[in-house]
Length: 219
Length: 219
View 1 (cartoon, rainbow over the protein chains, first blue to last red):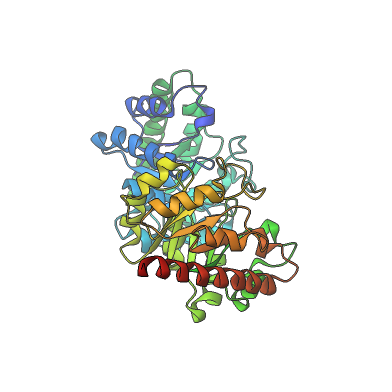
View 2: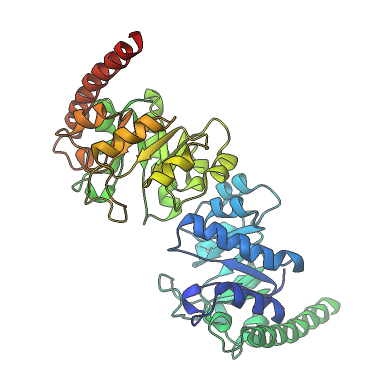
């Protein structure tokens, strides 16, 4: 999985329906959508997840659920994204089965090392930059930290935290396989256009990175 | 399942460890314990649930988890208690299997009627009296409401909301098969003694109720 990874936040949708923002992101070419709801009652969360799944499934875009394995099981999501305070990876894998996509946030170098032993599908390098969206995070990794994680980790990297069109190129060059964004799409004037522009920058930067890697290998 | 049903609230434990209060309630003869955590991160909730299970399992006292089916699955709880805003009953049953104990809160007469079609293991008549512990509840049922539900419903009744030693007898006489309490045990000076006294009042009232029923039948 490579590309633009939307993490939802209904509070940042500027009064628009979350479902409409997701549909716009799909038009713009989003690669993955993660539903993140910390206040919504379980029943409403499941209903919303089913509605988002209906939008994504025809395009084979994976639906990820943040933290709540019960909601993921209830709606038949493709996977879950777990943080260090959420369900331990092994428990999540046992409950969801071998086919589920499981992503894990890494906020410290110890987290990166510990993830090396886990069969996670990606690690979420969080936060790359300081972000007002999530206030309970550790020190930002920065581009240097992201490069260091890329060089060490055997897992694909999803970069999150403060990513926008302005820094998408350098974040991708530093090693991100997915660019996770919240407000850069949710709060955009035109979420479809914002997604498409992020995707364009990402695709270009990734092409250059892949060329560089193949050149390094050919030497 | 009949008897005293402890619903936990760590904020009401007067600075004592929740685990210690649960252990005291076990000494006092509690019949069932429900863990209710609305703010605790998933990982800590699972760890707490496993610790409570270790206390209850040797006594074959069921462990119930409020709302969170993922936590129930992760710790191997005996069941879940769901409210009207939590996972729909059918989904909960599908995820937990036929052996799980599933209790459902009923706050209106419509809820009671709807529950009649569901294979729930009990309904939680909530709140019987006004209670400061839970502020998002509907109008209290009162003893009259409880009697009406008892006469109509095919399910065992767990009464909750404002139950204490002072009203335990009349609540049991009105039809409760379990008395669910939060502060009456969590905030008690002596949780073991409080549980034992509630159980004594309940057992006495239930014996009188059973005698009355068998007398009614023999006529």
